[in-house]
Image: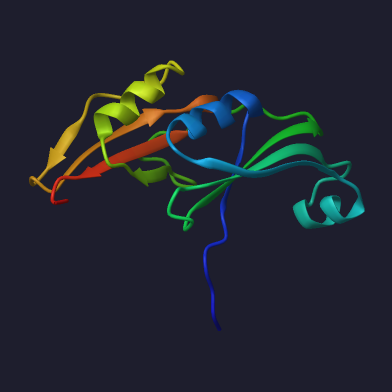
Length: 145
């Protein structure tokens, strides 16, 4: 059986703010829509499912994020996950310049949890909290030519 990762879906508090954050990091918006109806109820498993959605893509065309802001049922706030919790962990991105990526993130009030680390002179990497508490990992390959 062939399988490929289609996208990662993330429910967010503020769709526009989250789109701005990820587009400033370099993703592009492929499309937007508002979804509802019986098909959406069945697919998602929620009665009266109604959400604003946006599909974003990485510049290489390989990675996609589907962001959704619930109109109905009301979104349920939860504590953001911590790096050692079981379940959905983080979204990770390779970046050409981690300092520039962190400058873009800072414009949205998002900063490293602790700092930027260097792993064996191979990667500079960090975790930060994005919009709606999303854990985002940024990594710069130091071996690039």
